[in-house]
Amino acid sequence: MIIKCNHIQIIKLCQQSPIGKKLPNALYVHISAIASLSPQLQECDRQARSLLPKESKFTIIKFNYEQPKISYLFYPEFDTDPHPALHQSIQVDLQTQTTQQRDYYQSPNPPILHRKETFVNQDYPLYQIFAQLTKQEEAIGLFHETRTIGTLKGWEERLQEYQVELKDHQLILLPSPSEKWAGGEGTLKIDRHKAAIHRPDLSKPVRLALEAGLFTENTTFFDYGCGHGEDIKRISDRGFASNGWDPYYRPQSDRTNAEIVNLGYIINVIESQIERREALIKAWELTQKVLIVSAQVLIGDVGKGQIAYSDGVVSSRNTFQKYYEQEELKLYIDQVLGVDSVPVALGIYFVFRDEMQAQSFRASRFRSRATTPRIRLVSKRFEDYRELLTPLMDFFTERGRLPVGEELSNFEPLLTEFGTVRRAFNLIVSATNQDEWDEIADKRRQDILVFLALSNFDNPYKRLKPSQLSKQYQTDIKSLFGSYQGASTTADLMLFNLGREGFIATCCRNSKIGRLDHQALYVHISALEHLDTMLRLYEGCASRTIGRMDGATLIKFHLHKPKISYLFYPDFDRDPHPKMQASMQIDLRDLQVRYRDYHNSD
Image: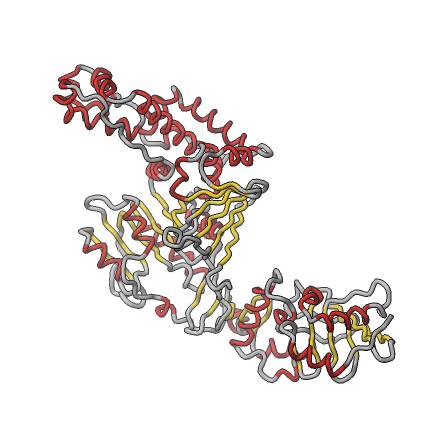
């Protein structure tokens, strides 16, 4: 039974609708958003659909203000085409209960859509992509004088007039005819120097290098593309020889070799791909020990006041910005320099000249903390030798074993007094608990297994060789496992087990640490090193290759999918019910990274 809709009431409801694109003569709504309309509008839609021919296809529903008619418009490429063309329309007259169909499939100049985000709800999967494109188009004036751009030909003429084209919902600035011939990338003159910013303290990449212990006595530092030179001054204030060069702010400075070279947020502000590559190579040529490379990786609201140019965007300040995906940045560094860069944080990589130093740094990042066992039974003999025994206790706590070979030269006074380190250690054990020392040794075994397994996970076709490790680390392996081969075989078996169906879910359910629900195990970042070794290894498969999200608070181990998420709760310690500000999810099947920002979420 058809109930007539009150047309005046329908117009009023359309004009008040919180969803849909409102034009002077109609309301347009995507099929996915119909449930968000008022019940009266949904009823009118239901009645109109009952009159449609069977198997009718449509994407957009149009409520006409001038007459009691509803049109069903079919845009088959709504999701994929930034400005999809209309293929077919079916108009339903609610008064006469008749339909009228019109095909545009063969038309050379069909109607097209703009501002696609206005047709859908904000939770539509592609809403942000649509909205970003609209902001870019508005920023350069493409919607000025809309009278002629509602059809395909008119829109193509507008794009040609503004010398832009569209690719994957991004505006691309086209080269001028002369630059096409010359191989240029565009006509814009980028103000690169405006990208340099003043910082109240050390830049994060340089600070991380300091915290990692890369700066030692007499270390030299060079900042390639130093901007205002603030890192140079602050490193110099810490007592290190420091210098830098910048094409705008310090063009007269020499580009000199240094043990540590910083290429801080430079390759992301160079619009020329050739010059970008040259900057990376030149910085590497100056590097004697470690090159620090950093670039922007997270994209916030990059569409506002920006247009795509080359492989990045140009801001309203006329600066260029290339936003990398984390895995893309590593691949770029590794391919250009022929290296295996080490992720330290999002957008920050260390590149080592010496492979042994690189492996030592990697191993240190998966070393768990251990506490020297406390003295439980004080004897006069132990107290007499406590000062002499303390270095040995510290060594065992650090390495999980007793010193051997050349290492014994550091314990000559101890050897003079006891004859062997084993006798000295027996005295230590008599005053402490043997089980606690065994736990430390086992903890170091697990650290080594995690490191070796992850080394092979990164590049299974180029296995880590013992010669790539420091002599001390080789001794660790021999003392704790008997042989490098034995340790490697165990590490390989651990990696194999990670791939077994349901294995990680079982580890999560058996974990004594964290909060478990039906989807995942949630663990605070501070408790990571106390987890079961297999869960540590699983997390390492993500963090060693990609790096962890800045300020990550919780690690989420997904039970049913090979994924790990890092969750950022800035007020975790202060707020009894803290709000999540950001998340980073890594798919371990392809190492794809997905970010989500909740900073402005309701």
